[in-house]
Image 1 (cartoon, one colour):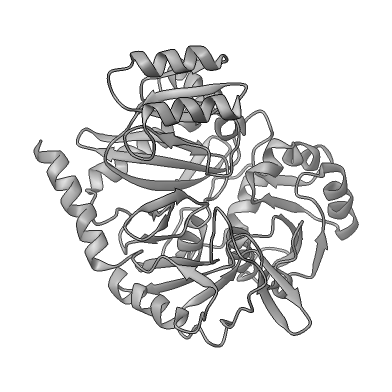
Image 2: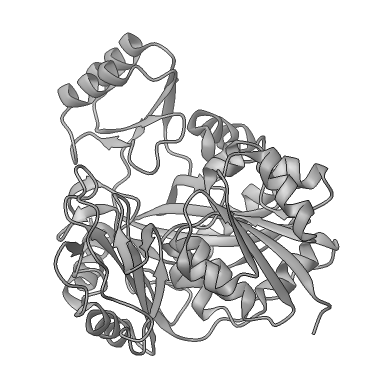
Length: 432
């Protein structure tokens, strides 16, 4: 067992609750946390919890110094973009998270594509970058195939519009004119099945985690607007049911090529891929854990997360990662009307006792004297961990039976029929 480490966690969502739970499983970890919202799950695990803006670098550094932090880890991308990792590193607190410049692989989609093109990273779709709305609209008119329309900056996972899927060409042009983004990326629409592989990265090395499939759309059957993620699942193997082992390895190869081109990168590198008939292509990179994907990955990580952080800081080889050979299913409970017009203020009935064999991760909740209530964001996630996806999914459904009125759940996440649709879809694409 390593010597005691004081770790500062920045962020207060479900992803950060999963990080906190994983870190504090190692008794050598003394955890402190700060976020703009007080997460009761994190607060219960931490020695201290300070309510601070995740983008206020100077206040976070002051807090880190006050508690004697020897390490830090950053959850949300907004903090990375604001240079919180740079500020903590400069203050002598090793931070597992990239500086603002390296985080541009997520925070600037134009940079991301141009970096992939320059460095010859495999899996890059055809793309074009525009600073003028009229030129972008002209490109849409002239393009033969469907396009993905991406604002270059951060949009909380809700800014991308896909022509031929979510919007028509005319709606896409109206969207660009309405928002008048500084820069926009237009790229070929990728068709297939999306999945994510997350990697721990430091000192030029990476260690990858099992693949996860997220469900961005608000409603069952992949209908409705995009959200921050309604739920996700992973299998007892590194790959998912609709993938082959070589297809998973091809995604890992893309992450390895990316890390080779970014030798100083540290933190989490998240690759979101579209698996088509010709293998995986890159939908995007993120510079931090996914939410909900961290909620699938970290509960089955058997290697000490703290050991990964200390090895990264001490310039030692990262430990090989051991994962429990278990499947996971995560479903988020969100307020009615989320994401477009969410109702807040609903009492939350689910708690650690009522979820049974499943695990509960709080996201955005309002703690009052008489209990927890919903805000306008995702409220909490429940994850089942079992030998099969089917059993894990049933654990989650049993736990969510107590959710009550005023909360909405995508019940189809992890259901056998939806997973079979994914398998059938890939079978069709491969045979075309």
